[in-house]
Structures are given as structure tokens and as C-alpha cells.
Image (cartoon, rainbow over all chains, first blue to last red; front, side, top):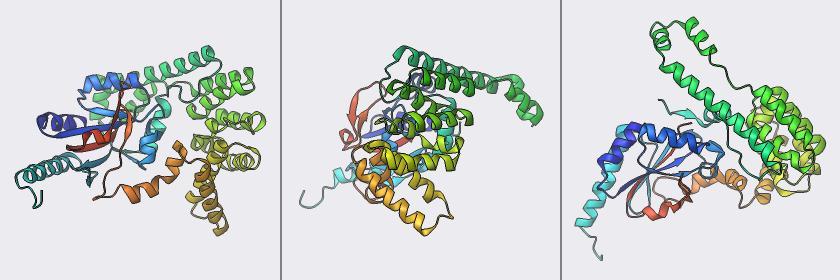
Length: 109
Length: 264
């Protein structure tokens, strides 16, 4: 997963796109060491010292890891739990929608 | 690395990769910090030794040859941190600093050591010394471990006692929450028990509004009502790993992938 996410972030670095993590490592030192080795280039919220029992995942009812939500530029949830190629496709579709909307403003805009 | 695993598995793994001290500031900082640091270091050394083993030539050869006997013996050469010894030391410190001060050690033991003797020791002390304590919730918070290792019936009897005798909101709310979970997980629960669980959850919700526990109880409803495809994503307000505050809504106008993840 991590190499895939990294390549997605690299590929779309000039696009209006962000991968945001909710990281559930209890130990920040461990996180920083691993992040350096694995080349983590995206920002994460920290789920706190309780790890997977932390407040953000608790509120969002996250029971499986990883859990993925894909949100469009208007802030609407559009896909859930897409991984690998399906994640790439979902993001590309939403970026294309955004581009198209820019070129063809709706009536009344 | 396969990161697809259940939250429970991640939690159990996290027992081996130990926690930093969370929650309240303990009164006996030096003793407490020393204990936590030693347990953390033991966990790190264990993870490192495991990684080293998996990367070793002997291990790769054994995997390729499907030599299970060899794999078992190789795995046995990496010893886990001694949860029992650490746990007993923690309980001794809890006794040494009896009163409110001992509670931190008890909470640490409750969340860290997957050992029957330790969790029984936690339960016994919580019952005897801290039944009416305001911060007893710190001990009960991770009750999955208590109930698993100190005995389900004993843990439930303890929760009933907390609900009956502890006058403070959070310990009562935690006890109600876990007891309700216990009933709801039991497929053979009677209708009477099921309605008791519902009442307890409703009461726990009232007691814990605005806390992490309140959010946790509301989570299934939150997911159903706020996190479906086509819905406006709820904001997240938090901090990154460097401690810098930010919000999900800062990213409005961009396509965003939200990824709940970890290295563990």
C-alpha cells in the first residue's frame, strides 16, 4: 500500500489533489523512523497515543485498517475503501470532473 | 507488507508494541516514566529483533523450504518482552503508592499486559481500593483486556459494582459501555439482558457526551448518518505528527483521499 500511495502522490503532485492520512501509530518515534525508510510524503492527522483506539477513528467508526474515503473538490464523499488501481481511477475521475466543470460553467454561474 | 488486518488484530499487536503514557500525568513521575520507558524499549527491541530475523538468510531459506520446524525454532529464538514480570512490578508499584497515586500504575497495567495474573491483580485492586475513585475510568477504559484475562464473569460483576457504587460520571459510563458491549456480543443474551444493554448505552451516552467515549458510542450512528457516499464529509480537526494543527476543510477545493492507516 505505501509504495502505491507514494506513487499516486508523486504522479499528482501538480494537481489539486491531496492524500491525507489518519495515522494510528501509538509511538511517534516509530512512525518517524518508518516514515523515513518508506518515504512517506503525505501529511497525516495523528490518532493519538491510543493508536487504533484513538479519537478520530473512534468517532468515524473505523473497524478495519486501512479504511479509505475519497472526497471530491466540493467536499462530498464519493468513494469508500477503493484500493490500488481502483483508488487511482476514482481520483482521476474526480480530477477530470473538476476540470470539466471549470471549462463548462453551469448555467447561472 | 500486508496492511489489511482487523482493528482487533492491530490492537493485539499493539500490546506488544507498547504505548506511550497516555492520559493523566502521574504523581510519581520518575518511577512511572522509568517503568514506561523500560517497557517501551523492550517492545522496540522485540520488534527490531523480529524484523532482523525475517530479513535473515536462515529464515528466508526456511520459508522457501516450508520447513515449519525450523521456522518455529527460529521464531522461538526471539523472546517477547516479559509481560508477566513487568506487570507484577507495576502492581507492586501500584501498592507502594497506594491511594490516588497508585491508580496510574494500575491504569498502565490494565492497558499494557496481556497476562491473566496481572489483569486479575488489576481487577482485585480496582475493586478493593478504587471502587469509588473519580479516575477509575482510566483503568476501565481498556476493559477488553480485563474481561479477556481476568475472567468475563468477574469483570462483569466488577462493572455492576462500579455502576452501583461509583458516584462519578466517567467510571460509570465506561462500566455501562463495556457491560452493554458484552451483552450485545453474546448471541444467547436474553431479551431482558438486551433491553438492559440498551438502557445502559443510553445512560452511558448521557454521562459521556462530548468525550471520546461519547463519540465511540455514537460512532455507528455517525457512520450511518454522516459518512455515506454522496454526503458532505464531516470536518476533522486535529494535529499532524509534528504537532501542527490543521483541518480537513483546509483542503476544500481539492480531491482528497482520506486514508486511516499506520505502520504498527
